Image (spheres, helix red, strand yellow):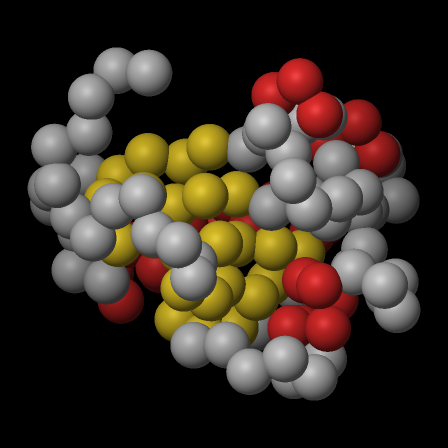
Length: 113
């Protein structure tokens, strides 16, 4: 964990957040500034700065995140209507928090971006 990382603080419950899903590897909580009716941030429970830091040693967390997407879709009742997963990697892509995270967006028809 990184003591300066806001997502690490949320994972450790130092900052209150509305969790949608959580297990040993994954934390998923509502975005404070949602871009869709359902906007959940899905993060690994270890500090991985971005997709550029994914490797064999932390790949299990990425696997678990991808398995969690289906569970989050069921919890938020969007399995049938669909959802979008976005991960920004680096400054130019719009990554604002340096902790790997996925935006789970749903609840309305999403345009092509």
